[in-house]
Length: 436
Ligand SMILES: *Cc1c(COP(=O)(O)O)cnc(C)c1O
Image (cartoon, rainbow, N blue to C red; front, top):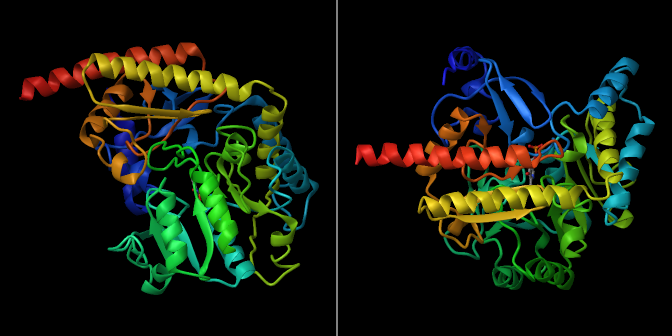
């Protein structure tokens, strides 16, 4: 496939943008090759600058649940822009989006909007610390909460020891306050609470982990986290930046019937524009400035264009009674199709899906945490990724990502994708056999 324009666009970008990209995964380092530059998108499809069309399963990493350039969203953004793009003063659209969110996620009595998911999670743990008067947080290996210092921490040498910085530039002091435990292991959390009595402000979790591939919670795990936090006076924070409005109208908390103290949102609630949010009970949220002492702010927070895109997106979701059933049928169809194809080619694999999210690991599984996810054959995934790209299917440029479907995807796209996967693997395996 000819990608001349993308290749030269990347050379140009490398001369001005650090690493050529504004977010590392876009650089294709995990799959090799040169990133594809996009020109436009429509529904389930997007087109690159060399003129190739792709079925898109990245969907801007989750936000585009209605697909690219949905007419309602385009209209809402256009009309908002004509009224003025930002005022630095409140607008009614902020209350409208907040009320829409609360009607579907009832644990959120009060909300605060930010411009990214990263800001939402950073602010949520500051609030949890301010509310509890405690300093430590618990997070789980393989869960991603944006690029705030407190979250870029790896597990220490012992399971109960404090974390260590995962990136240069993060101080040992910050790392000391983050305890990193394996996901889906309630016993590890129990032990951490016992070893850090009265010191843990919050447990923050992706209730279904979506940033190591898709790894749903085991039965009883989220309830155990709920019970432990209540018992020890810590806040339970569900980071639903990805899962919110993706697995159900009310996120994982609705699907699993668990009420967190704080919820962070992003992605879908911005309809493709930069938005994040965090919220919870009125009691906790009144600790935020200006009602309370915990400081949090943003020049473009609650931006009118972003609110308009979010309102248009959530209205479409709210008025569509069967949206999540239909999306999950598509996810299951693709997951099952991938299973059949991989089975046929004799490749070990493990599939997961929930609502509009799915993942096929190139590992025998079961995948339940970061350690089991890391068993995946990433070299094979890289070859598969490029063979799919050649066949007009845009998957995430890393094995450890979730695939998304939108309301613009139909069984036609899914069937085409499964046929492409069969063909792609035939080519990948033939090339491997030839080399051997
Ligand atoms: C994407 C994501 C974030 C970070 O959101 P940004 O808007 O990229 O800052 C945080 N948490 C989860 C679970 C995410 O998937």
